[in-house]
Length: 380
Image (cartoon, rainbow, N blue to C red; front, side, top):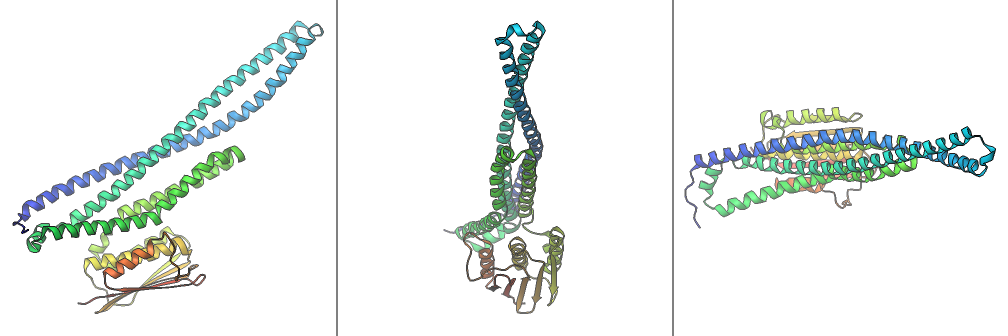
């Protein structure tokens, strides 16, 4: 079926409106997520306070219960030998037993209210966490849509006029979207998804630690849990808002890599990241620069997450016919002949290299560090 001539200006206007709407929606979803994060932190602080109060009330209840039993025993003795005690001693025994019983009931009621408040806060925190996860997921999806609207669909009118085949164009868009979703899925699976799974398991253990070991150790677990949540949030934000570094468009691959490695080193104390450019400093096609940046980024992040290195070196060489990338670390290494089940990082790197018609080899052994060697053909 032939495609009629498309009014490119009208189509561009429609796309501008779509981009504006998508951007506003993204901002609104992000604001919702940020508000939920603030509420989450506030409720977490309140939950910590309630748990401490519950522990104190339980201790007080145990002490009051012991005193009440003793007072009842004393009252029973007075009642049995009524004639051996004065009226004042009888009254004192009765009043003391009654007062301790009332105090015990009040304390138990307070404990019940605090426990209910604790359960309510935990339930609200789980709901907020689900909302935050959904907001992050939506922002990620909207970012992907926004990226395609502002980049791949920028000249869609001309593309339609030149291609003359609407069906092929639609299939290319769908294929690109699926590739981006797969990449994001891999990054989230290996990063924040694992962290959040650990957070859920650790959160289930906190109440048991409080009961069995006391509030002090429970607070230590909660502080550790906060660190894990912050790390997960950092990973999510990095994935969402670092989809395409602006420096790539403005400065090119070499300055962007140098800045990225410097920033990464600042966030990872104890690890030295070194960048060496062995070839020419020149601009490459935009899609190739993005792909090469992502390959280096993935290799470096894999090293920092899994290898525990003290030094990571990145070498880049751009010649007239070939772009070569070498990423080497002195970490604990792994058996490169065995593919770890469920790990998408290396799979995604290989797919990127294959799309660029290049080659990638990995040399690693346990205790000997890891070397990633990538070559991409390039012609002027």
